[in-house]
Amino acid sequence: MIDVTRDQEGLIQAVQELLEEEFAFSRVRRIFDAAEGEEREHALRSLPPRLLSPGYYRWAAYLLWLEQRTEFLSRLDAAEMEGLVAVKRARGQWESQHPACPCGARQESRFQSHCMSCGLTFHKREAA
Image (tube, rainbow, N blue to C red; front, side):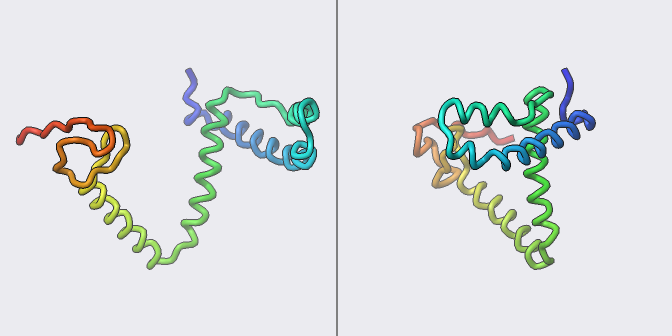
């Protein structure tokens, strides 16, 4: 099995195909939005085909999303960066005080014996 995160040539192809697909869809978007049934299917068939396995496109889409976020981060000043560090520390402390149950529900305290949402019993850790 190919590790798509390490296949640079495949990733480049997937990104290029996604960009072409987005460009092509922007041209047929008005038709697609106004169309129904077979007209919509015809508009979708006019988009360029994907030639790689779905994993390449998921990885490429994630990296495109990440690229947008890193561009935003590069515009932050020092005070904003320090503020984000403080937010991360505060979130870590809060999450420690209100741990999540496997069901996802946050608890009132890390000392609770049962989940407030699903009723799961928490087992106390033995002291080392």
